Image (cartoon, rainbow, N blue to C red; front, side, top):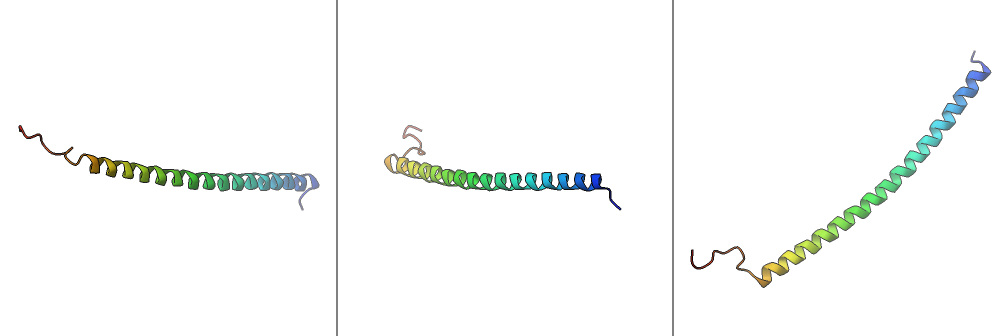
Length: 70
């Protein structure tokens, strides 16, 4: 049979593990939210970059062409 001290030690360990698990769960939820925000920002910046590149191409379409003296 398990002694009372061993039983108390197991209960303390279980309580610690439950607390640690709850903290990790909260941290993972926060990180998931932050990741979604970062992905949204990246998508927005990518769209802005594409818009700027498109506008630049429309303003000066001869950027990639050779000069006439070549």
